Length: 322
Image (cartoon, rainbow, N blue to C red; front, side, top):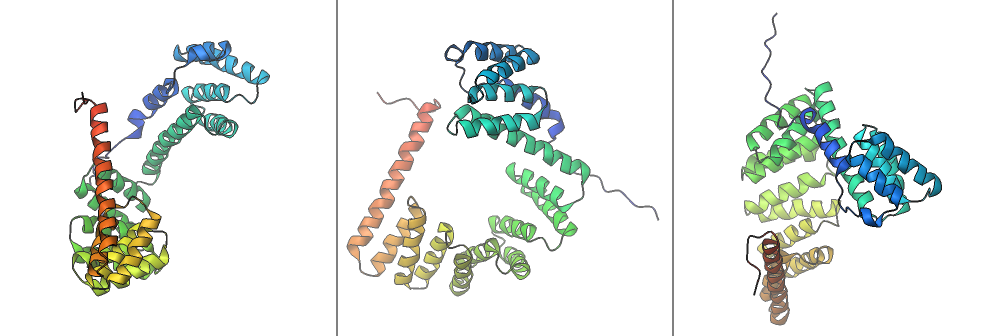
């Protein structure tokens, strides 16, 4: 029997087209060009790196390390040479050593984080090339589509992932989240329910179902699901907040206060929690506490507005004040 091949959807990104330019550009990028403050050997080594004289840059960094083995900038320079020449393992080792020697060195942290991020793209590409029909490959593609706000592409890839692995709790939850974002709540609840059946201790399905029930004003089911979410992850401010909201809708303002205060203990700048807390206090006749909670909500709103304005001024979108 002849098998009909299904045309593949174009990939949302192809690391093979950007990987090497990214690495080379990253290797010679300098977040803090302070040549004048660096020792002469390292300054010359950096200039050699910028001009493509990698062997000279490596020699200068290596000789400096022989004299000063605990020097973090020298190891950073060596790592940048290794990146430029494709020796990624050696580069990671040099950068990790630099971070151990100088944990607060911003250059060491910058290059190590950047190298890991770029290499992760290469590994994703390798996964797609080696196992193109695996559920993880489809998951990576779906998440890439989501990052581009392409929900249709994400939906198709998540469904392909689920066909490849019907018992993946991660994929079921991802589809539940996607459906919830589109307010297709019954479909979302079906996915969350399947995930919870496979993994009763799963937080995401418990929280997601509770959020859906809140949207549907099914307060009792929301409380049950969110209580389960809180029991699974007691440190989730979002779950305590949602449970407080559900208790408030059920006219249990005292219980709502307890959950909202716990959410604020975990996340002190949680504006929505202060707003709901003010309403709960008002229902309990605690006027002073309600006013204090509302004042805190308004203060956080002013702080956020001020921060947004400062960012817009820095980016040139707003004129600076006179």
